[in-house]
Amino acid sequence: MRVLSGIQPSGKLHIGNYFGAIAQMLRLQENNELFAFIANYHALSGGAKLDELKQNTFEVAVDFLSLGIDPQKTVFWVQSHSKEVLELYWILSRYTPVGLLERAHSYKDKVAKGIAPSHALFSYPVLMAADILLYDAQKVPVGKDQIQHLEMTRDIAIKFNNEHGDIFTIPEAYIEESVATVPGIDGAKMSKSYDNTIEIFMEEKALQKRCNKIVTDSTPLGEPLDHTKCNVYAICSLFLDEEGKEELAKRYASGKEGYGHFKKYLKSLIWEHFAEAREKRAYYMQNPDIVYDILEDGAKKARAIAEAKMEIIRDAVGII
Ligand code: ADP
Ligand code: TRP
Image 1 (cartoon, rainbow, N blue to C red):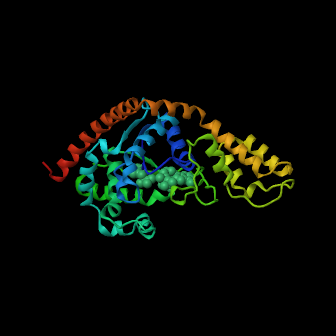
Image 2 (image 1 turned 30 degrees about the vertical axis):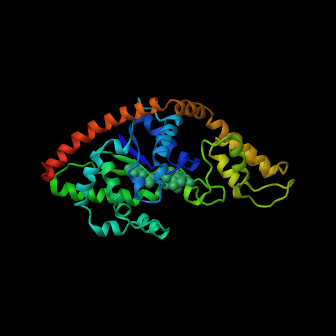
Image 3 (image 1 turned 45 degrees about the horizontal axis):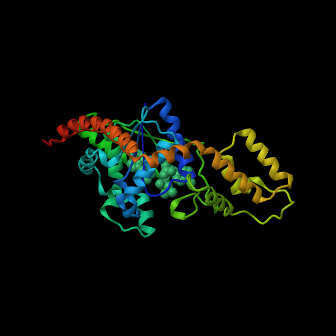
């Protein structure tokens, strides 16, 4: 099965990204042909700080490699290193009714949040369709907010195929229901835009400080705590198996420990879980050439597929 996913290099990765997206990719790369790329063109659509884009692109690559994306198993590249995607974006625009784009929730949400309503923001779903269709992806793991974009990709591909024959594979969204929405330190969905994240690669002290900021109720020390309503418990449980979760629930009920203890425990869970990745990260950060070589190798593989596919597409639409 060919699986493809992209992530925008719009800032430091947090544990919501890890459990919501990256952990799935790591599982999928074991038994599938995984295509994973850093969507840096998408970052031009608004909101991202462009003076940080180069560094963010590099760091997201480092983070992915450190967390376990394996370039021997997975085609891993930066979107802008395979330019065919921009050509396909234009060709697909012909098969994209304006009305389809006007219905996009994510466009409306972003404009409501104050992002400038540029053509890039408006046509973002067409570029995403090009990413997916260029590589004949069958499954696309995405968060719930991206389902509509996948439906648009399918609509565009079906319209194209109706006119030109079966050129594109019709992709399906792949949603793991078990992947919960990871809460942030204020209990809302963890997201960069809400400034409520816990970054994966924080310094140890900063990490403890961040965990200490998780909002809890004011049950005094010495009284049993309700783990079912606790954000600290919810985040801890992402790192624990069933037995670990039961044990922690018992500690909450015992009344012997307060939230401060559980915040320390959470910090130690995060710190240990990413210990190996942190070491790899330090290595890649000191050896950027190794990272760029891996990305170039990935781009070569991506380009070979993209170039062959574009010949078929150009021929179908009459571009010489
Ligand atoms: P952010 O909301 O911080 O800007 P992105 O929109 O860049 O994050 O998300 C990148 C990927 O991480 C997406 O696949 C998204 O579904 C996943 N993701 C982000 N935040 C969470 C969360 N709190 N819980 C689960 N998955 C998440
Ligand atoms: N739009 C996706 C997001 O914001 C990122 C993305 C770009 C993507 N192209 C893609 C995801 C292709 C899956 C497939 O999270």
